[in-house]
Length: 165
Image (cartoon, rainbow, N blue to C red; front, side, top):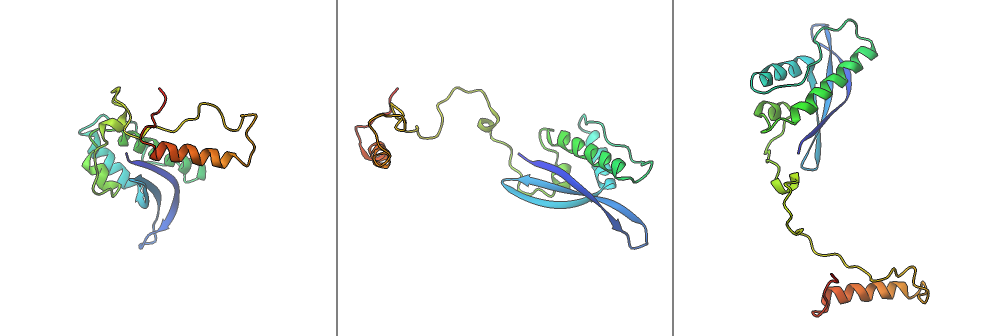
């Protein structure tokens, strides 16, 4: 699953003396985060491309009345909301993956998406105690580590050990 956030924006001075704002996008994919900066016009181009093929959410307007922090923050929040809705599109559009600079994209596995199957879990069963060792009246705090070690060793190495039903 890809997650993306737009935590901030900043003013960039152009070569010709004209300034513009760029939005920092933090993209989380496969446990890694990378940051990219995009102008509003790049978002708008992606929006125009995606709306040809998919129903898309409302996009923030291009024109700004002014560049106060409140107006810019409203645009940032609108772009982030639109980006979140675009990330829900399935299958993920190649243009969106390219925009976010995500390579080697893998479709989510069905079992990770809550497919509703009632199969047994793929992990090993957990070790349980029949009574809480901290509440046992006859157990002192010095015996507790020995009890825990004995339980773990028994569960791991005793071939006759079976998990209680």
